[in-house]
Length: 273
Image 1 (cartoon, rainbow, N blue to C red):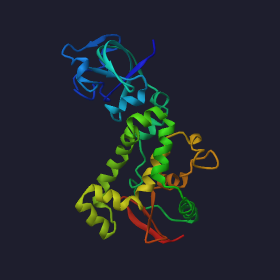
Image 2: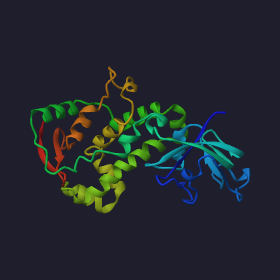
Image 3: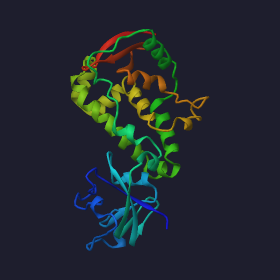
Image 4: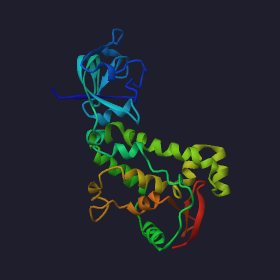
């Protein structure tokens, strides 16, 4: 029988009701008696599980735990998941990198470039990386999202759009949401923040967010980027190298670039490369 999967919160409880502990029911059958009929559709009450573990992110988030389960008394299903009256919990799966096919461990242990004790020193190696960044001509967000869709499978991308990428990206954006009010950004960006997150996202995308997208893309297998780059290396790696050194590059005012760094994300270098 083909295995199916269920994702839970780190404490073992389901994401939806927070009342069923799968970790404590390995080897047992979990059943709901007040399930909705098949006519109610796939989203109605029941126990949901998916053949492709990445499809589980429709109803889950990260961090998470993963369990192999057996569906019992299927109520209904679609191309993404099934809804069941009961699930037998077979085992917990601990290697989530292998299960999902992307770097889950890196996704839940992100490097925050601004959590450094002091602003990094800018030298020739950092400026050399920045020079490589300035030569990147791709639309980074689109390239990353397209490639991530290929990596996790066309079926996942087509059916749940960017559910997985937005789940992973939400972790990164959450870090920036905490930081941006305290960052010494331009006045126009600070004003945009006061209006709404949506406007800030649009206003800063050409500046700060390419670095976020580039870092997100590094969670996925670099050898799959051949449709973007002429070789098999990750095409946005210079962004990632700066990020891991505590530096976030951003372009403002045409060819003028800035490097943000340090606990307050201050501009520690500005100029034309």
